[in-house]
Length: 339
Image (cartoon, rainbow, N blue to C red; front, side, top):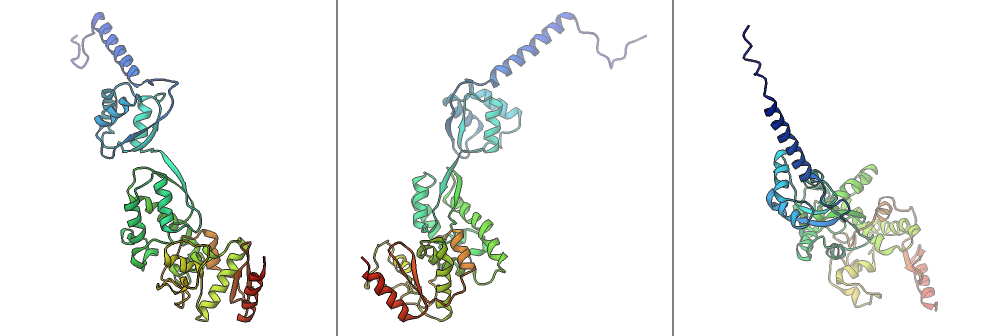
């Protein structure tokens, strides 16, 4: 009976031995290629330029002594079909990692993140200072975006931004930001957080009033209040004055108009020509004068119900609140007479 051509003739023992030898050799070569360079090696930071080719990335990793061979890296990337998935950025990699682990990290874009904390009440210019100090961007492009970049984004809460300014919408918080992002993308991280945190709070209150006006009021509260328990009271006073069409007379708006901080605001300062000068213009300033935190925003959303119309600061940062102008003048005299 003839054997079916579907079944190949038996291989001679020598061919089998050669095939097994080649297979074992291939396994050993692959194992040698993917095994870590140094199991006890310390992690190090490696920067991969955006748009770098697989071969260029392999050479960068080889030069940093993270991998054994750039060609092994390239081969592994091709076999796994990840040639177009590798991402640039700043990575913390270790020679104790296997080649497969390293390829996966770069393909997933697991870049190194840097914590940056923005305190409540910082202006947009001060936010830029923090970002530059952290090495998360260059001053000129960041400044351009925060001053005039509202049109770069599609967030509806930026509608009507004065001159495209993002002042007030760079929510103070702690952020995890990678290096290498464009100024637009770095600032977008802040705006995204604002949209996730502030907008729902405003909508939960019924979305009453302009959100821009709420943030503007909150920025005044942030700069005026020194004690947490006084935020809602100060918001209440400012709201009362707004409803009565009284000048707000907030020193912090004058300092914002001057563009510099001073410990004492003089009568000459009060004459500064600016729509932000609330000693000369009735109503809120055109936009926020700082970036308020959530506590100040909550105070602006729910001001205290009070009949106070005035307040004056004590030496310890607290305030004396008054209902009438006569009471206010008396409070000022008392504070000035104190040692």
